[in-house]
Image: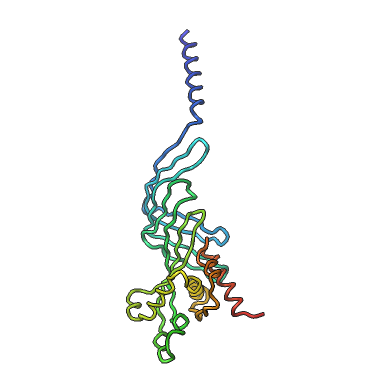
Length: 248
């Protein structure tokens, strides 16, 4: 009799567990230690990726439908953005300390706030040549360390990429004309020109002559201001460069 009761109780408990599974949710805490290395591929076609170290305390959830949810902030302490552009450019950009990825939902929808910089040595004639006299050009033939920046916002699944260009503060104080030019390139209406100069530095190793106003229009700015990858920004500039300077 006792065996029969125990058996019945066992079946009842089993059925109860099965019935409860559809509403099952798994929640766990994930801690990422400072020295742990994470790699995130941002462009599968080119192979561009982020490799980062940083700290995070994340909450991971898994519901009955198989959906993963992630919540928390990952702060970068160090790392690189590895850039490959055909066989023309292979460079590692250094991630700026404090860059971050914030999750509040699907792991693919992590909000990116990433900046990476790479120093390129170049003279400034191509950048400033139209704004100075012939007698001043010798001053700008000196090579300076330009800081090319890659800014990545948007989400992991749909990143939004833009460029930046700067000089160390000391050099901007020594060359106020260059400082003013760099400030101008930060304005939205000069995004196409900024992208062209970054292309020149990364792919050709120096600045390109400034475009005339006739070369820059609203459609060009709209097409080159924002992109989902560094490669697409550089490719658009390569196409413009080829059409402008290479005549068939």
